[in-house]
Image 1 (cartoon, rainbow, N blue to C red):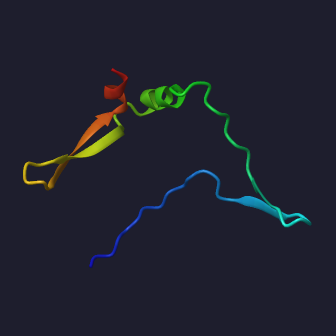
Image 2: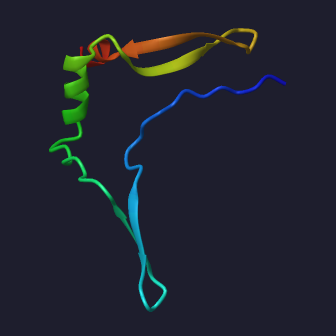
Length: 82
């Protein structure tokens, strides 16, 4: 079997404050300021459509008649915006 390789990924919160109270309740708190919530569900989409219009937002593998997987079918932010 071949070894699976992963690329490094920075994702969200990576440091937390941890404390336990007298009743055994565990508290976990982000050790950094959280970014503000988007005002609308499309706000982040519009941001990335402006910043990286040619980046892929959605993709799926084409299923060939043989049942095997073919090439990726991709939609960029610019295409999705249309």
